[in-house]
Image 1 (tube, one colour):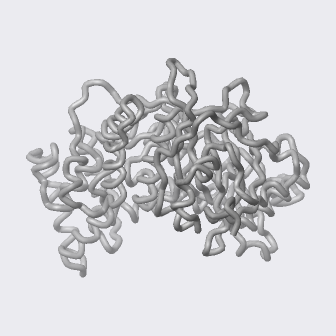
Image 2 (cartoon, rainbow, N blue to C red):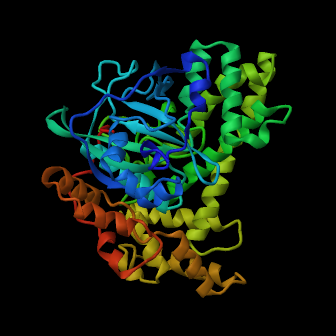
Image 3 (tube, rainbow, N blue to C red):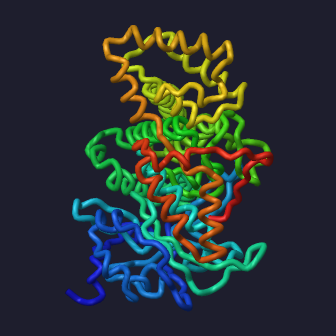
Length: 487
């Protein structure tokens, strides 16, 4: 084995074999003095990589973009997107796809460097990233994975030894992101807008082969492609809602065809339950508020369906009818997944028509009394009702009686119900103040111990261990939490 391949890189780049208009070949820009800050050992092992080799100078050089691993074919992907409802040309402005790691299980996983320098799609930007936002994506994406939410993942973060200039001078960094692929709704929008009909077919066939190979032999495979993407997004968004996750910038270029959560910019987790919760400083109208995420996902899927119309039927009217029929299923599919998830959060094994009213009564109380979303379900799980601000209110006393009566009607025991709740309600989430504390300590003082402890407790959110108790606490805060598009 050559020294350059001691790390275990087993790269291909099928995307590089697509039409040249889909991407721009470009190498990452070298950096001055890279330093490894964090390596995801568990993820590296699952990818078939050698942890010790990745920690060497040569291994870090790959994460920094100073050296390409054997088999890499570096490129920046072109795509478009509706940003806050407005269509525009985009692309990887500060990311480079090195290729696809073929894992020991034979799966393909994109290896992308984020913050690796300018590309033809940078639009005046420097192509770089600051350390804080890269560590933030690492923390949140790995927490999402532990919460069993489909997501891109983070393999490593390195500092570059070079500053980046935003409002102030900040330490530069590069994140190595792992994804099932970086195909987006915006990828299809780009080809539909500026490509040919043949190129659109090539992209759709590639997507099917990459993510839905079982559809390749179907006569109406493009309609089936639409169906499968709708199904995955319905499940994904329901999972977001069930844990109180607010993505913050659900532009069509941030919706992955694979059904993974992608692009952790101004995201955050909701503390007090309120459907109007917005964290992003640029979302002044609340377009991407927590409660708007399901309808926005439906809107994005309409944009995806529009790109597929030429492939669905030669008759445009018939193609539109086919697409509309599928899109109309999204909200039903989403609601089905959400309702099943909420039943599990309340320990309900079977279905009754009154369940939805029981769920909404609880959520309405939580909003009225400004109850913490995660900790309310946690209190119910362990019958510690005094731990929630709902305790002692007439509404909650009646609701609790109705809930217990509902549990009594099940064949399953109360013990089984509470066990179901423990596996459905996380003990902890990445609390905003904890994430900020970890980032500030890391960036300002070069101390990564706070972040490492946070990552450790977030890695098992359903453990409900004593060590997690302090991370479940919510501070009293008079000012609303705000996030910014730093990643």
